[in-house]
Amino acid sequence: MNGIFNKAFEKLRQAFNDPKSSDWLPLQLTEMQNPDGQGKLLPLRESDWTLQLEGSAGKTFRESIVDGWWQNEVGPNHKGDPNLKNHQSIAFPARPWPQLMLPKLTIDGLANVWIADHLETIQTSPTSFDLQLVLQFGFYRGQQVEGHTLPNAVLLTGTYTISQELCSAAAGTPPPAQCDGWDPQNPPARVVGDGEFAMEAQQMTVRAKVTLDVPARNELTVQIRQLSLTGPEGQGRPTLGVTRLTVDTDLHAVSELVWIPQAKKALSSPQGAEAIFSNMERTLNQHDALEQVSRILEQRMVAYLEAHHLYPFNSAFEVLF
Image (cartoon, rainbow, N blue to C red; front, side):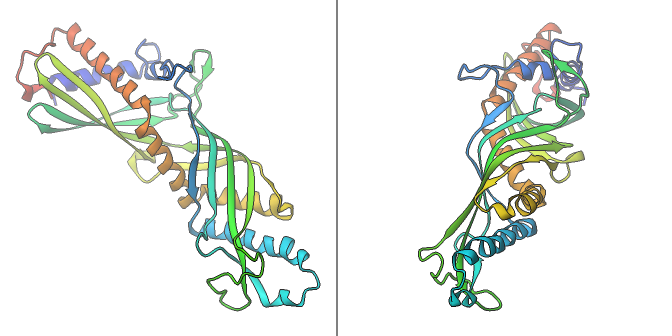
């Protein structure tokens, strides 16, 4: 572990983690420009995430909406109808789970990152190496960049829509698994709630897979290949908490007392959090930010090696690490 790149990595890690350095990583990330020319790249602004709320929390939310629809909409609409007792409400069998859509989403706090003292290297070819870095988010407390205090967590804010499809079915226990076409005649009915949300991802760690290629003594490329979101010490997923949730729905009777608390539980449940983090992970791995950060790493690596008269390389590749 005494090769050229290990020494270079440690020096760069110290500079990237030093708030007094011009290479401080939160500063570098904050200053990145959006490739479309529309200002800064961070915070990320995304749109049209679609998720399915499953698991026990999703089931509880679904059941509360199914019951609320029957008691507060279908029942009053059929008051006095003797056929009412012959039917019950069920989730629409073809799409039984609540659907969550995030039409507008902002992800903030991605600049508050610290590189851990951890480097794994695997030589994948005579001239190529895979590195694994560990990045910790929310590390700096109270630190400012360009006049703004870095968030202590990764923050997700925006607008949402949760919809639940339902229908009537023949009365009975257990409930049947098909609609009976009584209400509505052309199922499904759909209960929709819209609002604003704010969530926090605490203790978020990213494992970054980086490929370093040295095809010739005067060629060096650095490319971030994959980011994996994990919880503390690389275990599980981060903790997700819902800090704000509003709702506007036609099913007013369940909006405040049922919808909001059950929706919060569904979103922060293991299944809900996994859906959120899977989308976030996919977004980060597809984003232009990966290419820009790769270029930052590559430029700083080359600059360090040149400053120490180590590049172009004059030693065998096997001593680079």
